[in-house]
Image 1 (cartoon, one colour):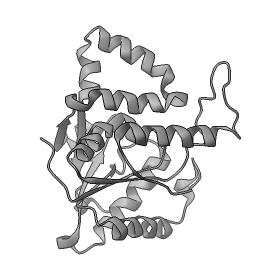
Image 2 (cartoon, one colour):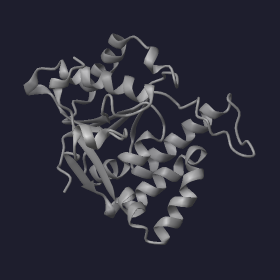
Image 3 (cartoon, one colour):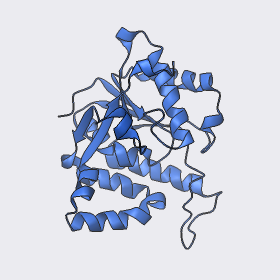
Amino acid sequence: MIAKEKHVLVVFPHPDDEAFGVSGTIATHIQMGTGVTYACLTLGEMGRNLGNPPFATRESLPEIRKRELRGAAHAMGLTDLRMMGLRDKTIEFEDDEKMVDMIKDLIDDVSPSLVITFYPDYCVHPDHEATARAVVRAVGRMPEAERPKLHCVAFANNTQTELGPPDTIHHVEAVQDIKLNTMRAHLSQTAWMLKDLEKRLADQDPEAIKWVTEERFYTYRFDQGYN
């Protein structure tokens, strides 16, 4: 059962980051009547997939991914989509305090009771890590009584051994089609895996079913630093 929230703020660096791990959760909150804001920091303009044969150039890919991001928001029923204008694969080089201030401004604007992002040190990509650190710092510097809950997605190979089992598992079978449509919206980057996933789902592969019907979160432990 997904708890009712006052408002949910989702912060990820790339278009499609939301699709794989949290689109079912986002769609469920929206269906419950909860406002959701998705702040996507870049347009993923350095994405490796330009098609085979190529359907995009490095110059045209940002507009393609922007359209896909809007399509994904539409699939989830999300109306508050914010494209924050940073450049893909450069977030790790942004000034840390500038990043924290950007997240703080978002929190001040929408007053979320729940923030969703990646878990620092357990999210693999440098842009993921820089985003996670900024969100954790922004929330951690708030007075404890005023902090929103912070749910983090972790998928590094050492996640289970070091963090243990997830603190929260959302069962999103009821919005599975919405989740799949959100992934399909990002077709420039997901076509290569959707064909295989859909075949596995048709074959009732239990791991594929679990992947699209369960979304796992860790509650950030502020005693770990990044403040």
